Length: 96
Ligand code: SF4
Ligand code: SF4
Image 1 (cartoon, rainbow, N blue to C red):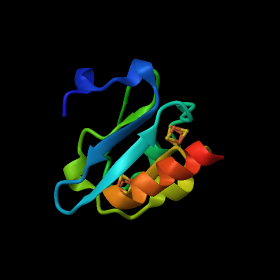
Image 2 (cartoon, protein in one colour):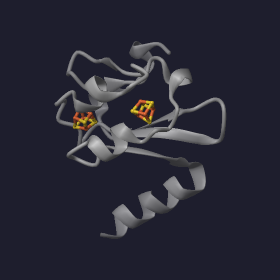
Image 3 (tube, rainbow, N blue to C red):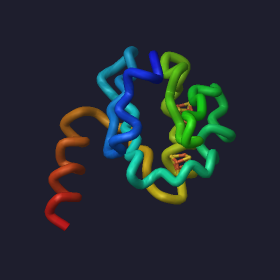
């Protein structure tokens, strides 16, 4: 995955599809403060750090969906789910 293809400067939620099933890693770059916890604790070293120290899943094919990054993020910036559940999350966040 080419980092330059991501719209990191614009922030917001970015979808990274996990190819082996229909789930994706969603990272909300508006909420991510670049603490590096997810990058450090991922057992499969899925993430590289962007210039802003935010996670970029450059080795997403190695993700086992262990959810350590999801539960370890202090800012709730990472979600792993399928497309339909994610659509509900977006609706929920817009309602609040
Ligand atoms: S779910 Fe686990 S393997 Fe996948 S990116 Fe997060 S910490 Fe790494
Ligand atoms: S743990 Fe959360 S806030 Fe910290 S770098 Fe990862 S996504 Fe960003």
